[in-house]
Structures are given as C-alpha cells and as structure tokens.
Length: 91
Image (cartoon, rainbow, N blue to C red; front, side, top):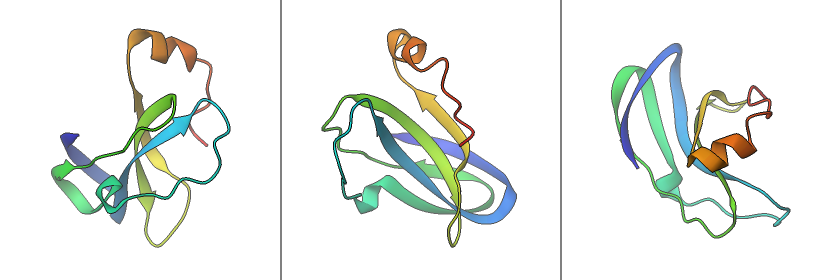
C-alpha cells in the first residue's frame, strides 16, 4: 500500500498497516514492512501486510515510544465495511 499522510498532533509516530482478524488466531508476528516512522507534517509511505486470515485491514498512527493508536482508518469492500459498521474504532 502506498499513500500520503498528514500528522499534526504529535512530533513523531509510527504509521502501521495491520489486520484485525474476524476470529481468534493467536499471536502473529509483525514484519518490518508493516511499520513506518513518520514525523509531524506530511509525507509519503509504503507499507505491506501478509494477509493469512479473514479480517479487516486498517492503517493507524501509534505514538512513540508506545501507546494507544489514533487516526485509524479501516478499509475494504462495501460488504466488509457493513460488517464492522457498529465497531467502536476509537479504542
């Protein structure tokens, strides 16, 4: 996935591409291509995720050094978005 970001609320963050699975699958390690260190302002990114399970992809900022995600965007087909329309994605 390639795109552009705009980060205004933090000096630095990690921009991550993750899959929220639809069923319990246990721990899945991340790969370096899922994360990009970004700085306040705007820029470009390229991220990748190996999709092994059913689920919903999302792009999120995470504070550095650690903390809860912010600025999350879920994406997918119309049907996939209907499946998660009642989710509270602020957590």
